[in-house]
Length: 345
Ligand SMILES: Nc1ncnc2c1ncn2[C@@H]1O[C@H](COP(=O)(O)OP(=O)(O)O)[C@@H](O)[C@H]1O
Ligand SMILES: [Mg+2]
Image (tube, rainbow, N blue to C red):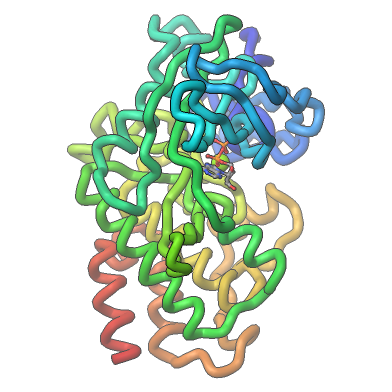
């Protein structure tokens, strides 16, 4: 049976829907693959989505005047805004694409709460209380029903932009950045939240007025509470009906629509560190499907094949972080931290 899915999207740059458990995977730009008799659809291509949802001078939430465009993300657009009464302060607003933010269960008629998706992103950010999490000052819906979120405006650049400019980075620079990422991620997990979509655009290197920098972790659009038990309802959320993550950084359990755990974020972090040090991914595949299939069936490439001067112990740690089975990875972010400290003390 077909459902009116065309208005729902995932962070994959298109819609990814799996209607049954044990679905393998699908997508890219309208690439579709079903396995085990699963029924899968991909309907929307990000390139076809209209851009520029906001415009300079437009009012958001009654008090914020839109100024300049910052960036388009997987789910919407980010612009700078200024409070009409406190003109000296700039904020950033993220507005979700029309139709985005609808929980798939709402579309399927399984759940009757349209505000849930964005509300949860805000709640997660507010619950974590760490300087590496963006402060959200207001959120709501525009008159045409699109969700918006007003937050502190960050100065600096995303790791994605930095990596595009610099390619592979020297070990000491990577270790400095990773230290900051581990710090935030540890706080996220300790607050009982899984991010599930770690990737360079979501790591922001924020610059303070004195020139020092620190890491902010962005975009909790795919976050869920750490599941109380592996097969609890929370652990299944977003897995069965809509796959989480982004293909180059996705963990095998996300590909297979199995429950996420803290080790899901640790896997993405392993891919991220690999990419920072080499400019390459640990799986040699160009297509989205190939990339996802590789992490189910192929061993990751040894980082020493791509980069010189990587200590054996670091290569070993990355290899463990990229283990196919979550239980074979380091069990916590603090464990990764400790092992790095031990390697580089
Ligand atoms: N508070 C902010 N201040 C400045 N830039 C931001 C802020 N939030 C996001 N951005 C920029 O916008 C990009 C997209 O943000 P993100 O939250 O990932 O949006 P989406 O949910 O649409 O994927 C980020 O990679 C970053 O460059
Ligand atoms: Mg994003």
